[in-house]
Amino acid sequence: MKKVYLQTFGCQMNEADSEEMMLTLAAKGCTQTQKLEEADIVLVNTCTIREHAEHKAISYLGRLAKWKAKKEGRKIIFTGCAAQRLGQKIKKKFPHTDIVNGAKNIDNFSSVIEKADLFEDQNTQPLSAPANSPIALVNIMRGCSCKCSYCIVPYVRGEAYSLDPKNILSQVKVALESGAKEIVLLGQTVNAYNYKGFSFSKLLREICSFDKLLRLRYLSPHPMFINEEFLQTLKDCPKIARHIHLPIQSGSTRILADMKRNYTREELLAKLKALREIGIEISTDIIVGYPKETEEDFKDTLTLCQEAQFSAAYCFKFSPRKGTPAALFKELDQKIVEKRLDILLNEIKQSSKDAYARQIATKQQVLFETPTNGRTSNNFWVRTKEKYPVGAVVDLQIKESKDTILLA
Ligand code: SF4
Image (tube, rainbow, N blue to C red; front, side):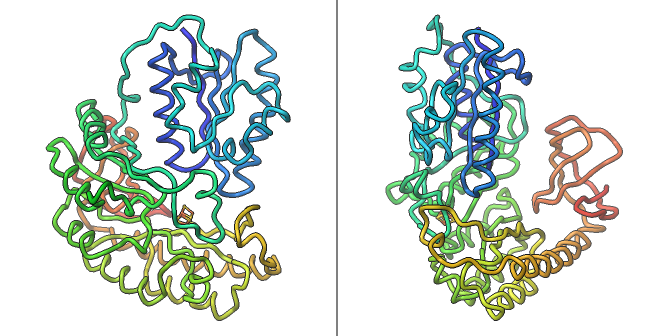
């Protein structure tokens, strides 16, 4: 029986892809190991959204040459977005790589490994659900058709397509029957999901009808696809988490247009307000120092953040990705970008502190992901002195907040 060591870089989409590939390897008779030294196969699932992420994956692959040389028969599978972007060039540079399989080809992973003849025995066993966890990640669509000017994803993952709801619902059923309490639906623009007229909101309602479901999350929605049907679904279905991670990227209509985000500052503000009125906490992603961003544009982002009161925001300096339209623009002076990033981070620190403070003295339903740490429906981490079994669901009174954690 071959042992597989899994190394995933990047987002939860990648984690879900890794889980799918591990199920395929399990069906080939492989088991997963947490120790690199006892592994026969290393599966490296990569990210290329920022240059830094790609470098990390490639330097990890470089280091695996020593690991492979230590024992005969060891194999390396390099997959995901960086594998898609760099293709067979990887094998030229790192000849110790056995299989390169890009993100667009993850659906064909099974036939790729079969052709590569990784396994002497072809003993197969039925697919089983992933490791015991209260949270199950479920891919509902692949690719992205948005073509935001700065983003490499559509080039490495291809055009968007939605998966059949029948398959999604049966995956959800298996996960819930295996003990999952929370389902996280994944897609690059998850709320653009539409399978032959079967909308994202319909899918949310169907999933909420499972008795065993405690909570439903989704990542990452795009502001453009927030519509009335979705807002009504949030109101009607309390099992849908009272939190949304909604990447806004900028608060300036001019920059949003240049980024090809397909919404204006005013439309964004109206959607954020509608979400807050339903009681949804909002976190976001913001790019600072996009080429052409003026002081005025940056101020628009800052004032939007002041109004939106985000509970958290991941703020990134613009990172040009070769092959995207924005990579051709002249970059801003890095000193200016650093300064803007500092100002924005301070603003977010304050709004996040306020969001945590708002939770004090409230009663929250906490789903424990470790014996002393769990998450609320509105996505705050709660720490307790008392230990609970992983997967326990406990109503707790929030006593205080400390940095980015609530204490109960
Ligand atoms: S919506 Fe834009 S930023 Fe998000 S994955 Fe698609 S192209 Fe990239």
